Image (cartoon, rainbow, N blue to C red):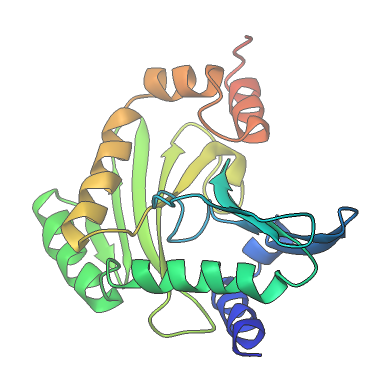
Length: 226
């Protein structure tokens, strides 16, 4: 079936040695009876894309619900709806793809913009050290597709051990790549500006803006108690 083959290829396009070890994709049976499909969106291009909920309720043997909740695409349906749910997801991805700029377009714009901000460039990595912090951005290629890419932004606290040998001192986020190359760059800079001092980073850790394990380790290394 086309939808089954397609979801396999979509899954492979995001496998990077890390994503697939997290929530990934789950397809399970439920006791209605029927199917439950959950697809983790947070570390994909679809993270912040709107989805209009779809609900069909024609009886116990003809029903389906598709929605996005807590960064998951969720699909539920009767025993005949497995392919239908996958088709909904496939069509949504297809509609969104036109809004994602090509990788080379993003690389070119980032090279120009970061140069004006005095970032050092090495390949597809941009880096700017300050007295307290080091700001880094990189465009990471997927091993499955030449046009699938990820934009990562990170902030290193200089007083802690160096990245990548001690990543606990490093806060990283994957930037949403929906929109134009300019939109992606602006989101990257907005994130850097939001945490452009140790005080702001500490406040972010206290508010749990980042994964709890990262927040706890940074506060512990800086000898700060909640």
